Length: 173
Image (tube, rainbow, N blue to C red; front, side):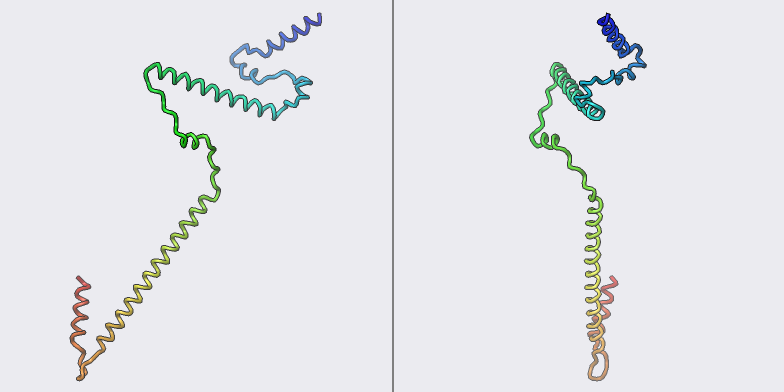
């Protein structure tokens, strides 16, 4: 009668685990029996078990995807499409390598570089302006000296005055 009790208990447990309705299916999916002594001693508890199940699900997804791709390629071949060419070594390397983690200082570095370029550009413009003002000042002083020159009788030298007027007219045009 003990064998009957054990068997009937197993049957009852299986019946409890089996989904009777579709709306209860999701609840039963994650329901488990109590952990046995051996399983508890083996250390498959909580977090470790969850991690192992996650890895298993992930591996299963990869396998399922590979199966789908293979069947898709077979159908394409049957339909007359050419199979896709395999990627080159460089493409394969770039796809299999993990992406480098993004640098947290990328934005600040770019901003600093931009500010440095702006500062350099402003300094160059300032130097150019200073050089232009020095040249203008030099020309003005030279022009002033020419205009100060006088003949023996104290009259301004007319050639300098005429050149000055011509230069002004040419600037206006």
